[in-house]
Image (cartoon, rainbow, N blue to C red; front, side, top):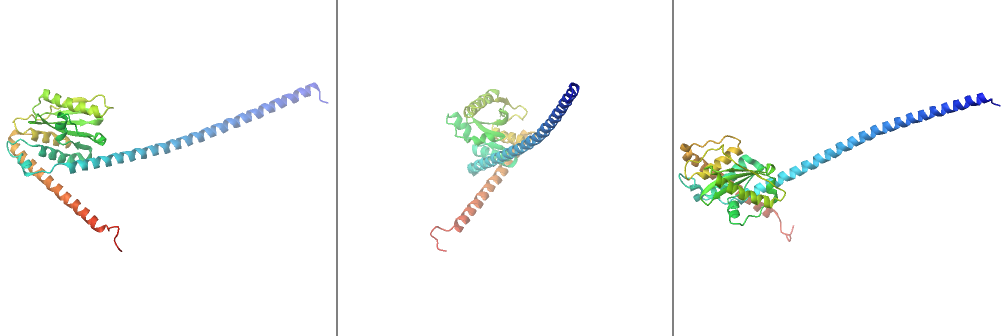
Length: 288
């Protein structure tokens, strides 16, 4: 039989052994948890990377889709530009008032050559319809462009230009005579319309551009508008010498005439391609 002292020592050894087993278990458990936490963290990080990569791909896909839509919008716009007639080109002759056809075609030519698909130009009909309280119906994709050019024929006798930057909620007006009253009146009307069709837009800042040359004659406002647009699309300083107005008119006439010829050639080529497609396509009841 065990004595009292030996029983006490036995219990102490059992307790110590139990403590040791518990410590070993706790250490093993702690190690297991740490290892699993590390594995879980690695798994979580890898999932995050996968999700972020998927998100990147989604954003790229959306961007490509938007750019494609913008390009299509731009092509549709260029295709809808009214035909340029001899009378339009003659409006660029000395001391003539430049007409709607030249302004619309000139801005389209600039946007096509310098602004790429990032710039959209309204035709002169947009502001005229707005003044008549019969605004044109617009596609929502238009507001995805980085900048929108709006030619304005104020009171049917003076050209000016508004430039809207949708991503910055900024409207900049270019009035050749720097008439603040006219500039504000026009910009306020266009901004009111934009805020009405773009309900999420609460505020649009309006600025008047004063760094560009002032018109010094009575008939070249349209020429100044085209030169303003060329300057900011090409990101260069605008210089207009009143002594060189005649030469500038001739240069614009030549450029727009070349633009007209390019459009005609492009139209002929597309028509030819469509005719070939029709010839190749067999009717349903054709016998092989």
